[in-house]
Amino acid sequence: MSKWFFVLTVLISSISFAQSGKIYPKNPPIKQGEVNTYIYEAPEGIEIPENSWVLAQSEILFTVITKLEKKDGNYEFKLKFPKDINAIGVAITDQKIKTIDNNNNLKYTVLLNESLTEEYKKLEEISLWSTANMFSNNQEIESNIIKSYGKLFKSYPKLKTEGYYIDYLHLKSKYEPEKTKKEFVKVLESYKQKEPTEKNLTILSNLQNHLEHTEEAEKTKAQILSKFPSGEMANEQFLTDYYNTPDKSEAFIKLKQKEYEITFGKKNELFLVDLIAIKLKENNYEVIENLEQQITNKLHICYSLNNHAWELSGQDLVHPGSNLEFAKRISKYTLDAVQHKMKNPTYDDVSHELQGTYNMYADTYALILYKLGDYEGAFNYQHEIALQDELDTGGKERYAGFMEKVKGAKQTQEYIEKQLAQGIDSPRLVAHLEKLYKELGLPTEKLDEIKRNHNKATVEKIRREIIELYGSIVAPDFTLTNLEGKEVTLSQLKGKIVVLDFWATWCGPCRQSFPHMQELVNQYKDDNVAFLFINTREGNGDHEKRISKVSEFIQRENYNFNVLFDFDNKVMKDYKIRGIPTKIIIDAEGNIVSLQGTDDQIKEIIEGNK
Image (cartoon, rainbow, N blue to C red; front, side, top):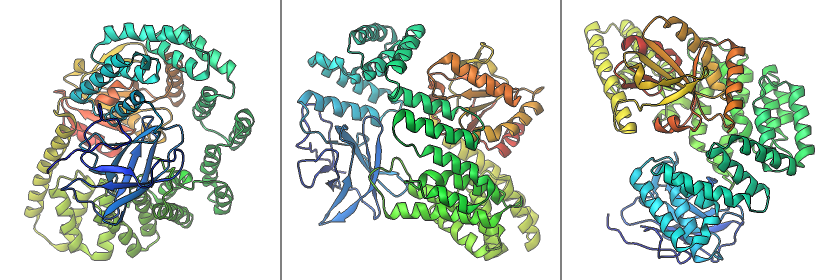
């Protein structure tokens, strides 16, 4: 692809990163805080499919997704960001939010505030570059970001008073920890002299925590909460305490809702969302409907509705469902809500991968239809997802079940054989195929060969995925402290199969999986199998409170788990964990053999690697 470079007139060229396409305002100047229309000219050689999207992100990870429309030979899109956001990074994606054009991994930089001085324009641009590569762990890119920051701060020392300088130090500390620590101390001392606004005191508290000045950090935090009882930290603390309360009752939620509105002078729909989650257990649609009408963004309640509908569906083809008509009604609501949003996207949709969300809800709806005897409807919904190649293993198992009812045994046999040949790891699909072979009177020799090839394809597929993600099959080593205060090092467990379970107390699916995980812990307690439950993303900077909270949870639920604390989320990042729960299995040689073992598969994987 031939490359030519262009720098927007609103950007400063002396430090701007090369942009292979063009993005610029249609009607300059940009009106900050309002809806603006932008032109996108694609680079030569890049095909832009229909129904493409624009993903725009600020340096504080505020994300907006909007539709790209073809007009007059070019493309246009509309964006609205809060007035205090000065610059955004833009990428063009498909409907699945997969990148089509992200300006050679740099993203297109668009400056929203043209009144900034040149040094601040440069600062915003480097910050966006850093944000775009936050999770890449690419040392070459990080080194270039550090150099760019360093050059800028050397040229404009006054910029060291900005929060960006702290971001720079955090990145630099990965490579020069001792040198950077001295710079952190200087910044901390400077913040002690600043005006005691909530923002300045919060930064001071964060710096004190980073440098492990725990007592000082606690005093600063107490000062913030006392001085700004309706401020951002108080708001965050209120919601954190609320979220961390287990088994919330209806009365408790209503009490906290009223208390929140009095304290902070505004409403928060999360209380209504939680009330709906409780009321769902009554299976009374009229009650849900009354609460739903008070919700502005209907997508906020769809997650709870889908979870409840999924539970009522029986969750697979084998187990019977319950209250299926009610389940159908609330499941259809989620589909309608997402479809409406897909047709009418707004400017404040944060990170909604709408098609993926729709597929997840359609998967639930299809299973409910199947349980109600509407096999044609179930197949059609699942087929729509299959055409996008978006079915996970469980979805493919259900699709095969629907297909057999609608298309017959022969077509289902061919579908399952294709999936197994591609390395889909599913004992249920294997069992389904065995059943079909008996019904169709097919030779068992062919089935045996398919099963042998399937096992080989599965191992090779998983190995490729692991190498693609980590560059090697060797599990990244780590040392973490457990609930008893003892250090546990992964490499010292060689000779044992190790199951890593990344979790947090606030994670519902994590908690749902724990009874089964306890069964596995009990079953393998005398074998060479180690289960490590890595607590991550807990969100509380106070280590002692976090330990106490987790310990209380483990004791209350009577779990016999070896819980490790990933306080700085480093292990989570090293293992590239995107969501929890995630269960990773490591063999006795220290090699990763499974990236996301389901509860049903863990035992099988353990037995296969003993």
